[in-house]
Amino acid sequence: MRIAHFSDLHVLDLAGVDARRLWTNKRATGMINLKLNRGHKHKPHAVEAIVADVKAQGVDHVVITGDLSNLALETEFARVRTMIEALGMGADRVSVVPGNHDVYTRGSLRTQRFFNAFREFMTDDRGVAKREHHGSGVFPFARLRDGVVLVGMSSAVPRAPVLSAGHVGAAQMRALRQVLTERATRDLLPVVLMHHPVINPRGAWRSFSRGLAEAAAMREVLAAREGDVLFLHGHLHDRGYRTLQTKSGATVHHVGATSASLLHEHPDRAAGYNVYDVSDGAVGPVHARVYDPEKRSFFDATVTAKSSEFAD
Ligand SMILES: [Fe+2]
Ligand SMILES: [Fe+2]
Image (tube, rainbow, N blue to C red; front, side, top):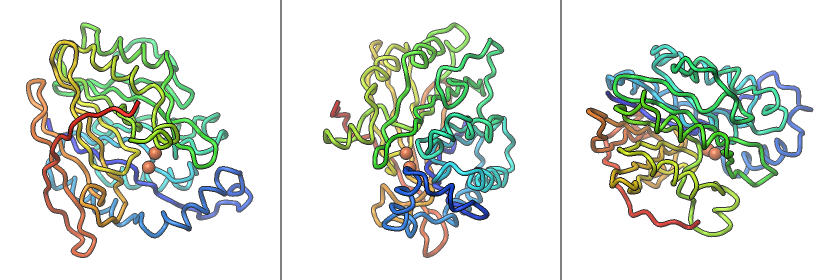
């Protein structure tokens, strides 16, 4: 099974939006931030190029790990939907989870705007009674596909300006542990999707302001699995691959996708997407398709695992 993973599209669309709606404290800060450093680097044409390239790669499933929008506006979600629909793969073959930008304001969280806009990409196949373990929607979801179980988690919560830390919650973690240990998933490779990584960025301030306070607890849950786990995240706008050992000696492959729209000179940050080939419960070598904005084409790059050091 071949999985394409992209993230952090940060699609901005203010068309027809009442200016008063942009003047919440959080959105105003976001707009200033955009003007200063984000707007000129995030380009929708890179995302459109990714969609076209994924279609040519013979991919079985696409996963998108959050920050699809910039300000959690309906106009942005509509534009992202058009991009996802251009994949031509149908909702059964595309899975998404929200990022902090998709619940940018308390109002967008309260109305579960992201979940309602993309719910067919977050369906649960287990046929069990679903329970809401997170304020952003019905999480975790589990989707069984050709030797894998895709488990969608939400770490997306609104924060005060300049903060983008995630929150999972004890109930959602318990539900994840249950999915990872139940009989129905025993012979499948778990592919866990979550916006925030479970290895925090280095430095106390970065870890506090952008990371996950529950990172160590989440690693415990993943490490309780008997076999290998593929954990896919976004948020850092960096192609990073780390490995963790589970209690039984298996491996958690912890892989980040960079921002799909980011034009950046650093090879690990430049726009693109990751590709995973999974067979018989094992993850093959990870590679990326990296976008060259001048040629408007992609080249292949190997993503090698770095050592795992914890700042938390
Ligand atoms: Fe992001
Ligand atoms: Fe983020």
